[in-house]
Amino acid sequence: MSILEEFWYGNIEPTEYDTSSSKEYKELLQLISRNEEKLLATMTDSQKDLFLRYQDCVREYQAMAECLLFQNSFCLGAKIMLEVMEKKKA
Image (tube, rainbow, N blue to C red; front, side, top):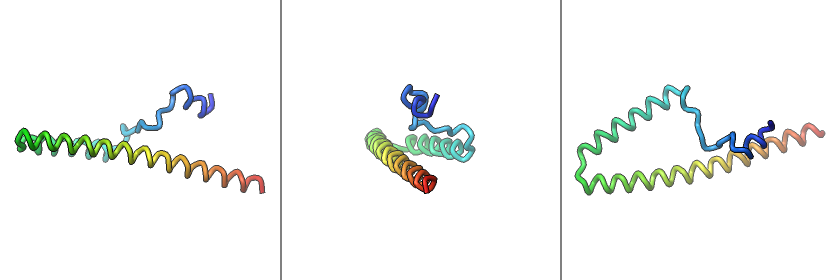
């Protein structure tokens, strides 16, 4: 099956990351979780509410940024392929 067919049938999810092999990623995620737990433990209810709203905004921003990065990366990859194909013709 071609890569386009795999993509069409949903066998490829461009927003999924394989982080299982990244030791640094796992360590950073654990550190984030520990620090968040410590921070939340020191907050009042209104501070927790504000922090949760802040986290929601950060997640929304990250999703938008990741989408734009994907789009720009895809276009760059297409431009690279076009250039390769042009040089192949010459």
